[in-house]
Image 1 (tube, helix red, strand yellow):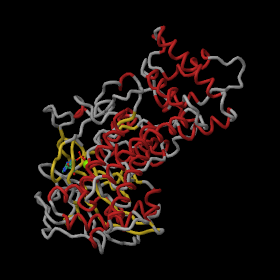
Image 2 (cartoon, rainbow, N blue to C red; image 1 turned 180 degrees about the vertical axis):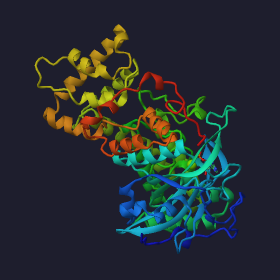
Image 3 (cartoon, rainbow, N blue to C red; image 1 turned 180 degrees about the horizontal axis):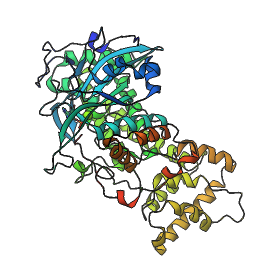
Image 4 (cartoon, rainbow, N blue to C red; image 1 turned 60 degrees about the vertical axis):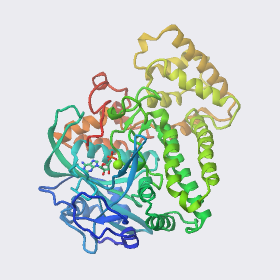
Amino acid sequence: MRLNIKDTFSKQLPADSDTSNNPRQVHHACFSYVTPQSPENPKLLHASSEVAELLGITEADLSTPDFLGLVTGSQILEGTKPYAMCYGGHQFGNWAGQLGDGRAINLTELEHANKRWAIQLKGSGLTPYSRTADGLAVLRSSIREHLCSEAMHYLGVPTTRSLSLSLSGSEVMRDVLYNGNAAMEKGAIVARVAPIFIRFGNFEIFASRGEFETLKQLTDFTIQEYFPGIASGTKEGYVAFLQEVANRTLEMIVHWQRVGFVHGVMNTDNLSILGLTIDYGPYGWLEGYDPNWTPNTTDKQFKRYRFGNQAKVAHWNLYQLANALYSFIDESEPLEAILDSFNKDYQIQYLEMMRHKLGLQKGVDGDQELISKLEKTLQLTETDMTIFFRLLGTISLKSDALNSEKVLDIIKEAFYAPQELKEEVLSSWNSWISNYLARLNQEDISDTDRQTAMNKTNPKYVLRNYMAQLVIDDAEKGDVTLLNEIFELLKNPYEEQVTQEKWFAKRPEWARNKVGCSMLSCSS
Ligand code: AMP
Ligand code: MG
């Protein structure tokens, strides 16, 4: 295995002079050098050959001791010095001070095929940023991160990637629901990959402490290395930087809304400066379409991070980032303009995205209303989002005597209780469907072309929460067959996979209120 090591973050930015792993406050430094904990009995459970390829790691390399050593932290690559980043964050709306890579360790950056990638281990032990925790990760949350990062990538959603999932060989104590029922679980390590793992919180920490020199170094580094075309060091450059971060964040959120993904913990330390989905914790996928849904039990009371609030939260987080960058710009108008346009642009892009989900290529007055009515109607009875949109694409305007009842028969498959539909629910659906059919008739596109287009934006298979839990249950017992199956399934989420129809199904009833399926916490 020959990797082309090319560290930039740790080479160009100030390091903490203390190199111990002890938890502490770190000042005037973007990161601390650390030593990953050597796992007791590491075992590779799964690797993504596609991510390996991005790094110049071959299929044959994946089964070597060197690869296992790399992705579990038991072997440090020659010429590299692992480090943990210093960042802060607003958690659930409140400034939380220094957080940092508490259980993530950057191994190195490398270059392959003209692209630069950072490799980071999650669950490799204490760092200066571990606060009172242990720096470890458990199998269930590591499976969820590994599977979902890759599933998101194949759905076309900007995301960090996952190279591998391994067992550490040790046990870790966790209280899954924070209710006094702590138990031992299998420890695991995910090796994840992204151009760089910088978050909004990396900027906030220095602004909050008045460490403006370090803030400037970090901001200039980020612009120079990751925002080509923007001139750092000028007021205009910093404004353009915020604008670009806002654009990328917006694009990411529109994708989340398209596929029904709820991040669950959109704290500012969990928002990537590159607009990548990052930190897969208590995330979830909408089953019944419900803007108020969040899988995160820690957020049960206020539901700050619910599905329908993600764009608002992104805006709130960008506001915090703008505050952190304010000292370079010293003028609020250009920042406010960016934040204001975020809201307007979101409306525009959301509308466009929903049009595509409905197979509408033209923009027609009244589309906004058609979409709002749909959102309301979808909530009248529990309706599976993924199945609904996929079925909607099967309508054929050419078929004889197409009417709203026939369409309703098709989409009823997406209802969780199709036998119990009240009269007013049926009439709302009939009314929406007839408006929709009238609208489809304004398009100049064949049924086949419309279906092909819709099937590219409405996934057939997503990582339903219960599917991840089934994978976890098996993997806990040492069986990774299902992990492999689901991983392969989700590589082609828009394709019909005839042998895999069983995953194009509503959530089974047993999973409705099961921990891990609908209820998740930050415990991981
Ligand atoms: P999260 O809610 O997972 O984004 O984590 C918030 C902060 O807590 C980050 O600084 C994490 O690195 C840190 N953290 C979470 N879990 C652990 C853990 N088991 N050990 C050490 N730090 C952790
Ligand atoms: Mg985090």
